[in-house]
Length: 65
Image (cartoon, rainbow, N blue to C red):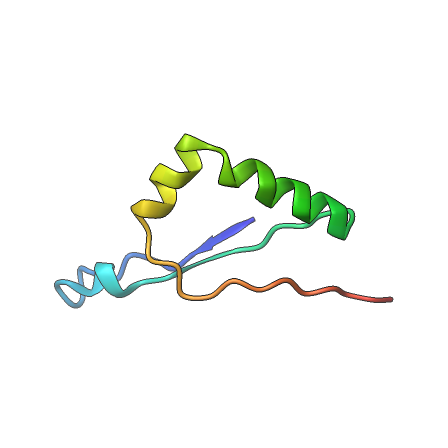
């Protein structure tokens, strides 16, 4: 799921470049996370996409319950 902040640039010119997005992803296991990152490291498309974005923070959180 991706949560995008609303476009407020009509109220403050230039504000759009400072807006951030939050991406939440779920995985069934830690093994699935490792396999996903291994596959992404070998992907030309992923490397090109990452080169075009500024990543502020990335973390893995495990919910127990």
